[in-house]
Image (cartoon, rainbow, N blue to C red; front, side, top):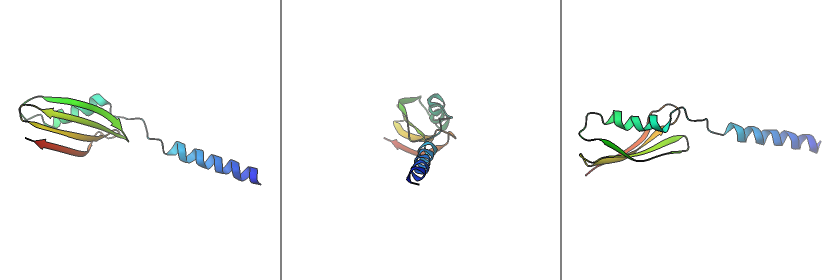
Length: 91
């Protein structure tokens, strides 16, 4: 009886572990970089990227526009490509 309950417990743990893995990103880092460019297309100056990284299902894009003295960070969902959170600062 103990052997059967151990096997069931093992399968349950494996099910939980494999079910909690995040899906592979549908949105690439290059596509994530295009989102701030589209968002700031009417502004003066070129959008420059300080860094692009991927963590916990989101692309983290740090950008700046030197001409306007604007900079910020966008957190972009790696499945839908939508901005989940955005932080912007102007000098």
